[in-house]
Length: 156
Image 1 (cartoon, rainbow, N blue to C red):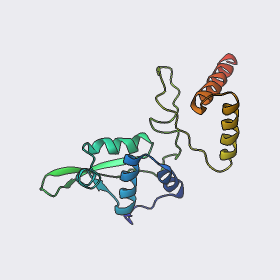
Image 2: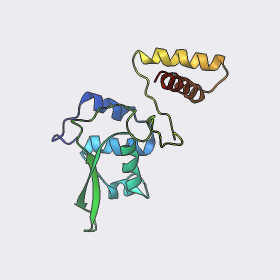
Image 3: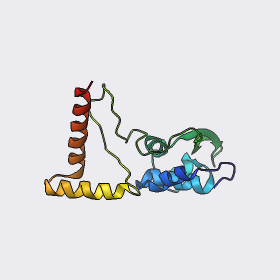
Image 4: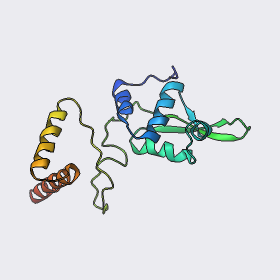
């Protein structure tokens, strides 16, 4: 890791919780070397569209800064490093993949929750309830959220 940037423990935990292959490769490379270039993403990891890999990381709520470096052939290419993490609230609810409630959204593309610590027990109970009702967990969570939203909207 580049010694010029100290990473908070919360940030490291979020980075380590990423399981998707493409963003995890970007994150691991940046944590080890301080930055990653589009050339490295293409040559080392085989990603034909390196900016998509960087976007995957950003969509998880992890800030990246893009800057220019000189590639092996002398051309200017993009490189990525972690952005300003000093005033970022680290949670998996940030970014595109989190549950974002907006009036103009017609569809939530994905529900991505991180269960840790005492929350694991809650998840296990939720899973057992879903099994008893013969429902998939995402469907069951969606129903719970819809009920809560209706309950809160009726109180206003």
